[in-house]
Length: 91
Image (cartoon, rainbow, N blue to C red; front, side, top):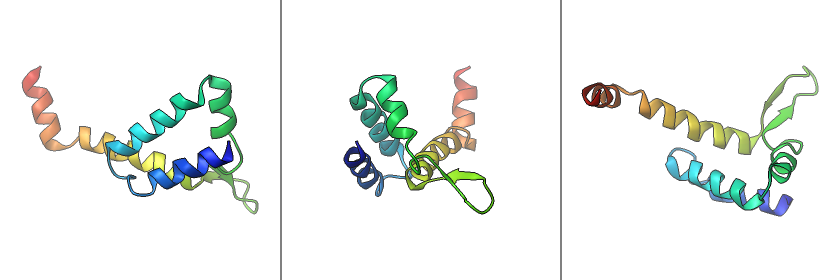
């Protein structure tokens, strides 16, 4: 399973700022099968969260940051001024 995770990281490397990254993560999760497999891979040490030993606070691992960045960009794009105007016009 760790090989699959390395492949995911390589795919996300060039797409951390657009919708493609979200689609890659969704496809990756779908291919893992059931929820248990998803929990195992995404819950593995250092994948999404990593622990700072000195302060005992969790922070995102590299894959976690890439997923977070993709989601954040999507949220920001959907709340941008032009997007809000467009949605307001439709309503």
